[in-house]
Length: 247
Image (cartoon, rainbow, N blue to C red):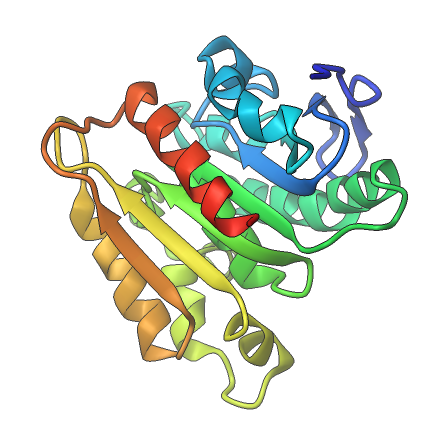
């Protein structure tokens, strides 16, 4: 198994900062794994997620990529304005679309099946938003213990940037004949949630209701009260779902 850092990341002009990017594995379906709120590109390794995924990585079934949680840090920094946070989210989404995904394709020599996006907590929001905004680039999202209603960090604002970044808000208004909605209806969103400490299962059900109302395939898996909002839960969830999605 390889735990290389993919070029050490790069300076993004659109974000005006260096973004670290990490890669584990050599072959298989590319998986873009978003960190939690303030996490960096190697967070998943420190919290033993990569060890949990090792059987899939070593078998050449998945190749995992991660980058710094740029927008997540602003959502929870306690000082940024709502409008700034929403703008940062849009810029981060654009970084994923225009910089990171092309780099993943290049790293896979252009022979890339649909990228799977995944994440926990705010990482789940990023996975969902990324898939819903750019369904042409991704095949599925695995969203674990998600925080999806970001209005709590908008300080009472509801800006245009927030609207277009938040699936709970923009998916209901997608034009019935748009290519975006047509493609989204051919994708799959898995919403997994524990029901233990610090979990909010209702957030996953809210997303499921919005997606379902627009004909977007999705599934909510509730794991019960023994599963808290914690890495122990996510290490149990993600290998199971990636095994399911890459058979």
